[in-house]
Every structure is written in C-alpha cells, then in structure tokens.
Amino acid sequence: MAIKINLQETETELFCSSKWWGDPDLPADMEYPTAQAEEDGETFDYPLTFICQIDCEDIAPFDPEGKLLHQGMFYVFAGLDEYLDLDSPWHNGLGLWDKKQVVVKYTKAINFETFRSAILVDDDDQPLTQPALKMTFEACPDNADCTKLLGFPFFEEVLQEMEGYVNFLQIDSDTAGLRFYDEGMLNLLYKNADLAAGKWKLVKGYMTSC
Image (tube, rainbow, N blue to C red):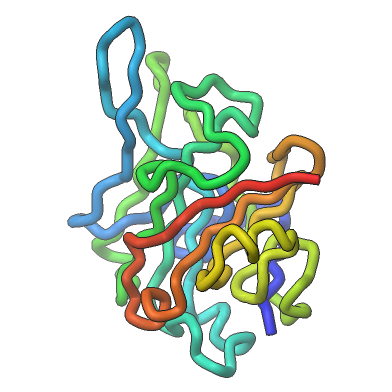
C-alpha cells in the first residue's frame, strides 16, 4: 500500500507540521542543504528547493508494515527551481540526477521550543519560497499515478533503470505548480536495505516523462 499526498491551501500556521513548500522548520543543529553552482567562472553554494516536511505521526496510520518511521520529521529538498519557472544555476533533466541535487533529512523528535524556520529571502528581503500548503494523507494503490510515499514508481522505465530500489517519494507533474516536461515525474528512491536502515543520505533522484 502506498500513501497518497493531498495538498490544500490554508491560512493555518504550519510550523512543525506536515507541509509542502513554505520554509522548513529545522532543529538548531540542522543546516539548510546547498549544492555547488558556477557562474562567470566562480563557484558558490546555492540553496536547494525545499519541497516538503512530513510529521511521521501523520503517515503512521497508512504504513502498517512500518516501512517508514512513525516519529520525528522528514525533510525533502531538491534542485528543481527550473520546474517552477524560476531561475536556476543547474539543469537537472531526465534520468538519474546528481547525488548532491536531492537531499532527505530526518530528525527523530519535534520540538516546538527549539526548532526554527529557515527563511530564504532575496536582496530586498522578500521571501524566495512558495506559499506553504497543508499536507494530508490517504491510502492508495502501490502503482498509483499521483504524488505519493512508498508504493512503486509509476513509470516502468524507473523500475528497469533503478532495479533494486524502492520508491520513497514520487512527485507527479502539476503538483503545486511543478511541471516536469510532458506529464513527467520525479522519484526519490532508496535501496531496500538503506531505507530499512535509515540511511537517508543515500537517496537517488530519477526523473522520467511520457
């Protein structure tokens, strides 16, 4: 069984809650992930796009086999600004992405008193992030054609090219303003053993399209 992700506009404060876009609410010792970019012959660190944070208690009812953790918070980042029609220092296209372009982080406990929002702003102190959307969850078929946790990648190409890997997060085109070519998808994948062992740094990103 997979876990479908639904997104809703809301005026509710989503600090330390499951949310898509917005600003990540991080522990004091967790750094916002960046990747190296190059411009005019100079290299610099550029922030990855914050995609979502997931309160693990929210997904526990839909994960009876315990494939994911049921306490703490997941955070997902990737270099996908270009698919939001934003300027980007990279081009991450079809196929396997560079390992530094996809990051999953995890913290085992959520603390409202010590967590802080990592807010990105431009030179005019204007927010660089998309408005936060509330995330809700429901069960769905393993092969569902949607944005989901677990299950199987919808496109057979991913199953063939990434044999031995399992789906952690599948992001469908048209999700919250994203556009991956012609109805494409981005899958975040782990080897079974790495997912079970919580080796979150070993995530792979793979994009495919019709």
